[in-house]
Length: 85
View (cartoon, one colour):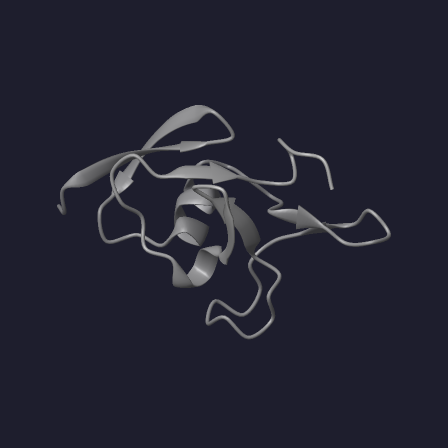
């Protein structure tokens, strides 16, 4: 079993395997949405390879694609469920 890292998703401490993407960490933690469309519909990782841009989240304050970002110790992730806009 790979070592685990601790990160925060919307202020909640989550432990996941170190070889996990942020999108996979969100799914493991039970998140069903990373952002909302202009019409308010929830969106989550779709393609898993950075093409669809549906998995956008703020990681350490910068908007990034969750499917292309590996987790690391102390990462701060913010989804649409925790922020305005």
